[in-house]
Image (tube, rainbow over the protein chains, first blue to last red):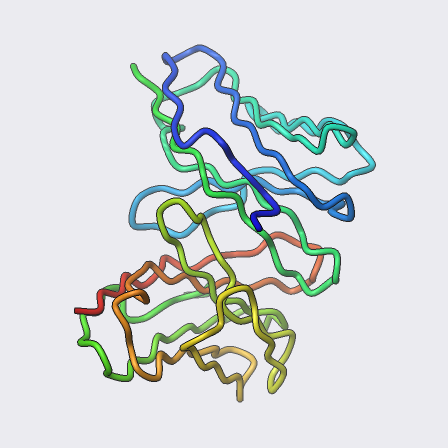
Length: 113
Length: 112
């Protein structure tokens, strides 16, 4: 059963507008979440993370919000740029302290000029 | 150069053949992982290793074998390749279980 879910396979936004990518999880033991960005023919690269003791973490144009009661997190990109076009993966750190990450299915973001 | 490298980048093999995907990291990180990426499934963990000579199964280990005799290398072997193992394979590493993973650029494997 998928413990981390990204229900939107794709998202298209206009340059300069906000992109909002969503992620849901089922395991209440998850306490550390990450977003990765992936360009074609490259490996995923770490973007931003959030611990469950916070509800928001910001890094430049990227902000991640965590709603623990709803088991939901979102990534906001403001303003969106064409170079942000990529696949975005949400991930949760396995609570067993093994370093394992459990990934969602990914959302393909297209930012149109 | 420092970092994590995977080889080969592309591989075509036939059903039933054995194939080994290589992963090498220069950071001396303890933790290493193998994931496969498939449409609709995201990244799924095949095997991982917490240190040399310590390996464990992930979510989809069937048909795969790993070894870790040296900290820097973590090869993944498909003992008898099947078409369902056609995928993009990513190796990753981290020095701490609570730190982000660093991924290699992947190996695209096609089993005909």
